[in-house]
Length: 354
Image (cartoon, rainbow, N blue to C red):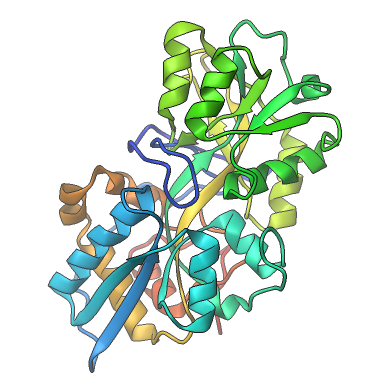
């Protein structure tokens, strides 16, 4: 089993980047470095008139807040003119990157996997040159949750039950379809689709037997917190082998998360709940010059304290910058250079053109 990063409750996050609202959660695979050496030199201003147009999800979502803050800091400290545009999320940003209408933007690991493999809403595979990774910024653990007194104790017990899912076209649902297939449950559960808040209400009211919950960077979304206050919530732990199989099949598009008693009080001290995860990453088109992307990413890493003063979403940024990214998508060489200089790079990842 690959290493599992046990996520701490670091941020309070919303449902951005095609993911649910909330905050801090666990991540997948090998551990990221615990400390980041401060770069000694400021990010250089790129030669010439450099512009970046960065796509984000809807206003107020995690990715929108993060990328708007970064744009303001990049404009302040570098020679890059950085602007943002709002979109419907990762799949649209992918298509805009392919067409050259954006320089890059928000995406998620599962959406990147789908884009590269003609999955989900993508009828044709996208050249990964158009969706090179820059850095990660959040992750969502997506365990199935049940009421504390439910007789359902495992994923196998879901057979014949009604399972609440996030919207059918969402990235979180894409994660769910993959593990349902891996566990042989695709035809053995009745799926009903809800928004995050509606699904939690349906579970609390007994209209469904279980629901796919969300813990963003370690913290439960508000709907789960409301159930915890009245009836109690348990998270089901997924079989490690099945979870690893899904991770391997998607090249990290579906990550591996580990929840502890710090995330849910019903989890016994000293034990973990294994769950699939989806993570938010920033991508760049491969045609964007290396020096421009290097300057952008280095500026982020050099100015984290300033960014934390703008938004709490940058707390613990170093934990997610590389560790939550997808192994099946290369990094932009400019981003990789900045991350290596900051001591955050992990050799399990690849660099485009390297």
